[in-house]
Length: 364
Image (cartoon, rainbow, N blue to C red):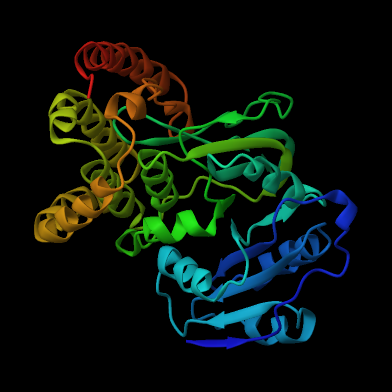
């Protein structure tokens, strides 16, 4: 691991804006030169007292050489190989100098005041994480995510996906932050142990949010902090493996055993839905579902060790964690037409019934 470049406050920082804290902005890149060419100019044009750290996972597209020439003020952390999104963020956090850590994807462009607004909620000592209003770069009139909704089964949904940017105008608590752009207190990040590096990629920000909430911290959506995200729903060869495996690990770490027992009907329904997606839309990689189950079995002791560490931080009940859990899966994000309507009509009422049962029983 090699670190190059300078770390310094942005010269255009305006102290009269009264930003509540300094920040270290962390971005993970793997052969993302074409995206950094859009993202970094917008980031360096932001107002705020911050440093920028690029955690590079073995890029070979010339982005490292380009960074040295075009943005010598950026700190470049050379990881040497692809160590995963979670681990690359953790390595960058270790060398960050400031009290707030900000994590931003390279496939974004930020508005000038995004960081100033993203930091404001930290004036409330109970706020642990904040997340931006993320709009689609391809259509900035539409929302990509206004935070993340956690479904009863642990599946995650972009809150507001595809809806008008005028919606969700008020700052409020959300189930989880969006990994495309969020900020977090450094001390909270360290107490939680950072990202779970076994996740490698996908769901790591949801797990981090859930662990923070379990420990009593708030996740807050900030509509004044605007980010454009070059988002397309992609399903690479291992996406189902990572998403399903990580969903199971997240639930096992965070919820009590009796809650998990009561959630079995919801988990079964979610598995039926995900198997349906795999067989209809990702058939060539159908074994990834089986690989996810196998990974949990093989690594059971490590998962239980992490569960024990997570439960030691608990200050919040499962009833509170599950209070706002969603019952509707937006099948329109992965299917079209009659299939999506049929799936919604079948699964949503069943998830609703399960949640009513859980709310009646879970008082712990």
